[in-house]
Image 1: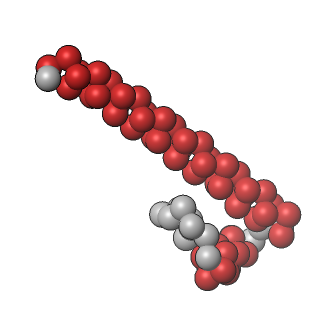
Image 2: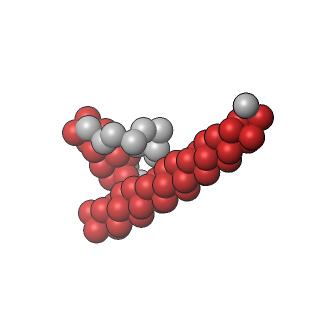
Amino acid sequence: MPFEHGTYFTETDERSARAFLAGQGLTPQQAADIRAWHRSRLSAQLSLWSSLAAAAGIALGFVLAQLF
């Protein structure tokens, strides 16, 4: 999907996403549902990765504190 690669959705991204989904023969409601689902999945993935990065940073901090 055109808006798959970023976390910031500009009006240009929205237009290209609407055009892509309209070209698939979907109703406006189906296209809106797909965009909403995609945003929620992207948010969930970003939350997961940021949580994992925070946990790794804390673990690395504890390891380095024990070494030095």
